[in-house]
Length: 112
Length: 112
Image (cartoon, rainbow over all chains, first blue to last red; front, side):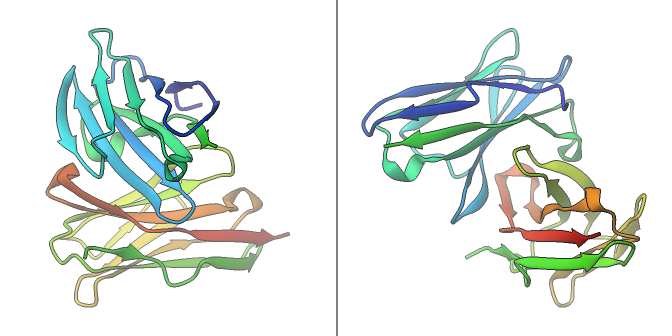
């Protein structure tokens, strides 16, 4: 158990819909990272937040947005969903350096 | 474009033997690398890292080798055990998280 929690574990929705994925980092970790893992593209970095502020942006679509709240939990919002958005979405947290990341169990999103 | 890829998608080894998993990268600006292990149904787990100013780093039963000349790194697992069965992938970082690329992964199967 990494100490990072993600909800829900599974999510099934339809194209055009909007969903919110939630992540609670390890106690004390200020950084939260979001990743997308699909079968054909492997793991892709989406975005990083540090203590409530956006720190780095990767391959995140404009239809996607994220935020980190004062209690340090984070949410990833996915809107106007497309079939190709079906993937595993991981959240990771760290207290500082890149190599201290701890990944959550992921949310499996299926868009029908 | 930037790419971090793996030579072998699946590797089967006998329990007790040594395993070698390879990764090639194309971005010569990558200055930090991490190997991750991902077991079925779980998030990635940090195994070992190496900075570009090193060519070898050892951990417990694992060794990472970096050859910057040919832009190649490998993960060696000594005395492979059934618990090592997982997907392993490398990640290359350039300037922190602004540019991070993950390999697709190699599935390691340990034969008892």
